[in-house]
Image (cartoon, rainbow, N blue to C red; front, side, top):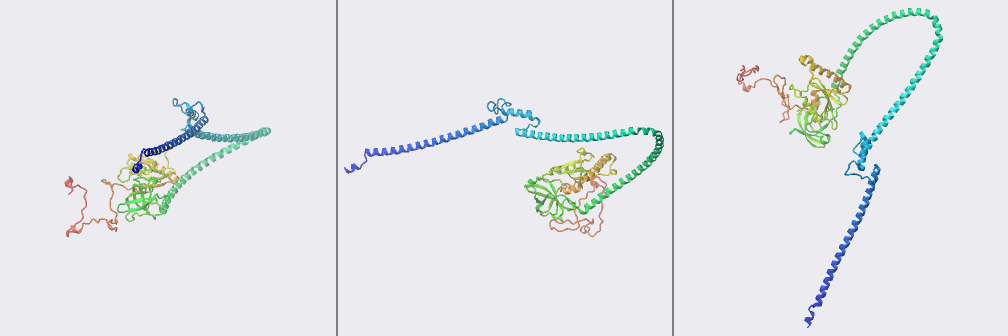
Length: 509
């Protein structure tokens, strides 16, 4: 019986089920209560957000209505923009008013139009004040003239009165004075004729003296110009600024790195002349130039790589050397004037277009130029203080050219005289084409040989050896044949007779 009493019965199962249902119901009730609380909080938040949005909308609507009233619209009737009629509405009306009242100064916005209208008003007011001042000045001048006129009238009136008073005496003495005057007139005529002769002689003498003085002035100008050139050659003062410097040199790769780049508006293919870092200045003389470089790669804001296109073997490039070109300045447009034949590689052909391209790469312009036909462009242009250099190419002399080319050469020489005077008056430096090319770092890329030209291409005597870095001495050929090929015989070197070989159809050997 005891064992049967310890077994769970229906009451126990009912109690367990009741407890489990109670727990489940409590958990469910809690969850529903929590979800309801969250939803209620979300509804409250949405309600507050809606109220804030309504308040913001009302504030913006009030501002729009105030703006419409401020610019002349009806806040209750006129819409801000009418999609059906773009010319209607407040904005359409504003644009119509700006177009009607703004006229020539109408801008993209009302503020811009108002600013332009204000500027026009200020200009008109200044013009009005200026004209008012001129009117006041003219009125003062009129009053002064009237006063002077009145003084003259009073003076003449007094003289008239005195004349009337003396008239009787004059009439009485007239006959005697007339005879005396006739004699004086005759004497004056004689003196006048004599004075005319003296004046003619004096005029002729002065003209001769003026001619002599003009010759003296021209001679003195020539001497002054010669002495100025002598002083420039002796002092070699430089007023040019250094464009940059070399940061590092790789002689094996013939590459240098310079302290210029994107931030300095540097462009590839630009060339520079290189001067020693100890040099007292750049742009003084071509003797200061120790090499030339050409920009190949822009590497940063203030760094670029350049290849060495020419270098003095006795003065190799080192870090700190100065670079310079007269046709490029960061942020500026340099202006150059040109005259004469532009032959960059001495092949007898004009390279004017090539020089134009080089200057365009550097950002320089030609403000005026005399071409090979003697025409100055642009028409009526002059050298001004803004011109950097007057570059002089080859200008032939009249006796050295054919008769057909003399008018063209004469026109070029006339322009050359005018441009020299303009350059001197404006303090513009006159420079030869070869010196100009050396300063900009130009190096010819071809060595063309044409028959009949006297263009020697010889190695520089005593050039340094690249392998040993030592001087190789004088390399000038003596013209003698080496003893290794004479085999004990003395043979005089033969000279060319100018005839082609028989193998090529000529009459030579």
